[in-house]
Length: 503
Image 1 (cartoon, rainbow, N blue to C red):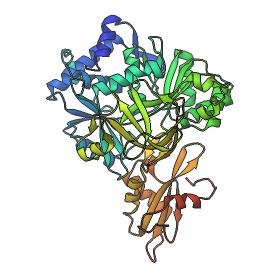
Image 2 (image 1 turned 90 degrees about the vertical axis):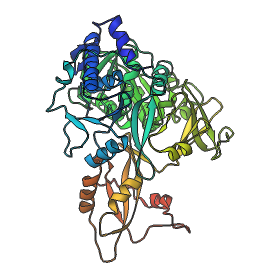
Image 3 (image 1 turned 135 degrees about the vertical axis):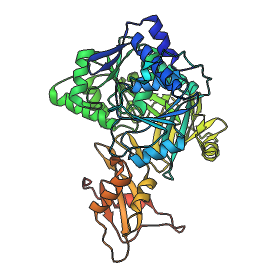
Image 4 (image 1 turned 180 degrees about the vertical axis):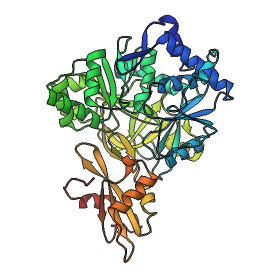
């Protein structure tokens, strides 16, 4: 069960089928894509990489991103996708913990180190592509395919081990629960390929669809609408903030959803008013998914039929939900002991099925705490109704989501506490109409000291990805605490003033 078999299969069936685009320009057809992948796999093997080795991808979106992922799988390797927005120190920690032998990178301000680092801006893949195409390496269903690092509440990233079986189940489930796909469809990677957008390459590779990397390498509303017009039947995965920008652009330019087939949104719930406006402006092209790194893209889905069924008596409630359990999984709401709760009661969302990770890399204690008797304890709180719709209420894990990216307060707090003039700090998320949440830091100065927002910003930028830095600092004399000394973040949220966070 090697995921690269999907590419091999389509290349044999229809080698002339369009495969990989850079912008609107066709770069590779499926036969040529498979040949490039097989040659690169051979080059990796000739250089000494063996099945099971990890290869890091610290890359912005790039036409060769898919080539590298599938070449690694073809050779029996596992990929370690790393958010390109991370600081080099954060990326280095991931590479070291994953014991990645090689790293492929695009330009960053802070270089990383591995046994071999290939910078695609200065070191083309030509040498590695000079080999005779390799045979597809057999892999078992539980063999590691994708090692995704997601921070925990301690601030230490955890490596989520996703097997070929996990990702096969995710891909097949897409056709049932999210969207049918055929060869005429095109998926555009406007969101980071290191995350959900890249995972959705799998069902589109299964179907032999077109894969489009924007020329800009990221999201630009004008560019995406132009691609929709030029290529047609465009699908994309986006955080709610990106969906809002798409809709804003469409409304400002007098456009509708022509050229788009499906826009899948996730990473955070979307405001009901925003999805109503999106449906009004661009039509029934939207699907919401809820998942975690530990059950990638697969927990629940709110399909276009449910989103569009305005005549249903509980349409408003459904619009505020995250949908129903996807086909590959069972979902329940349970107490801390894993005992299912009655419908309507708030409890922890728990998931079981073939998409649930095999465990955390080199962290059996965290694995045992998170997966119990086959059920993934998500840390999210929610309720189920009689029709199976799940509504999220809160996150028991101390995570905030800004622009679709997870930010863990503890890791920001630890950096801010490096400042010699800071005694205590507590980080929370403040609601924001554009980003969903933004980071706010409550800072207690040391006696006689006066830390500045500018100095703390510089400290954060030296240790963290820019998107994690606080957008606002509140300097206070003390932090509210309970009898056990735990900071009462609920009380801090109540202190937030309604003014817009400062940049």
